[in-house]
View 1 (cartoon, helix red, strand yellow):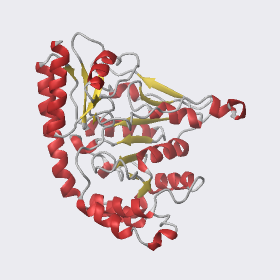
View 2 (cartoon, rainbow, N blue to C red):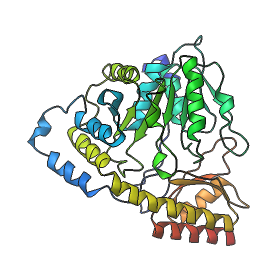
View 3 (cartoon, one colour):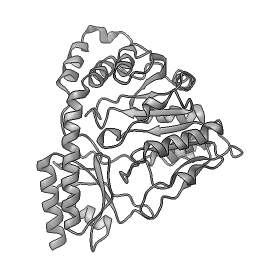
View 4 (tube, rainbow, N blue to C red):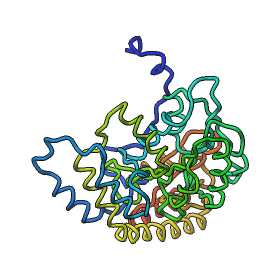
Length: 358
C-alpha cells in the first residue's frame, strides 16, 4: 500500500521495540523492565480511579501527577511537563527545539545510544551528527563542544550503561547555553546508580531533563513520564503536544503515576536490590570470561567469550531466556541483558556457563 504514503513516511526507518513474546514462557531480560511489582499505593490509586468518571476526559494539565513531581524534586509546577512515557516527551522535544531542513545545524548525539533518537530526527527532518563513542564506549564530552543544532544525551547511556558525571553534564549545558541551543538529558535509567541533574535547571535554562516511570517505578505497562526544565522549555513542549493531542495521559495513568512518584521510598528499596544483583551478575560474568561494561543502569552490556553476540543470543533463546542483540557495527558482538530477580539471574548465569562449556 506504499503508493498511498507521502514522501515523509516513505523515508522513515521506524524504531524496532524489543520482543514481547506471546507464544511461550520466557525469562524476559530484553526490554529493561523492572522485575519487581509496582508500589501497592499505585495499584490502590488506579483502582480508586476506575469509576464512572472514566466517561469524562482526563485533566489535560496532568495536575496531580505534576504536583507529585513538584513535591518530590522541589521544583515549580510550571517547570514540569507530563507525557505518555518519556518516548512521547522526547518526540515532542525534537519537534519543539531542533530545527528542520537540510540547511539547519546538525543535532548531536552518540553513535551508540538509544536508537529512537535517529528515528525522531528522521520524523522531524532534523539533520544530525552521530558522535563516535571512545574505544571503551565512554563519552568524551569535548567531542560535543562544537557548533550544533542542539544536544541529546542519555545518562546513563543505553545500551552501554556507562554514566557521565554531573560536572561533565553541566559543562556541556554551559557550552550549549552560550550557543543558545537546547540540551536534552535523558535520565531513563538514572535511579540505578547515576546522579540526576534536575536540581540544576535554574542555573541552566537550556537544560531539559526527561524521566520515565517505566524502569525505576515498575510501570512500563502504564506509560507515564515527565520532563523538568525552564518555563520556556516546558511551554515549548506544551505547544507541540497541544498540536497533536491535549489528553495524552488517561485518568488511570495519572492516578498511578502520581502515586508512584509519591512512594519513592518503596522504589528506592527495590532498585537497591537491582543494583546489588547487577553487581553480583557482572562479577560472575567476568569470571566466566565475558567483557562486561561498567553499568549504572538496570542492565549490563556484555560480550561473550569465543562466540558472536547473535549466536549467544540464539543459544539463550533456546533455553527460554530473552536478551537484546543489536546487529550494528561496533556492538554486534555484545548483548544487553536486563537485570531480573535473583532467581532469574541465577538461571541466566547457569545458562551462560552451560553455553560456554558446550
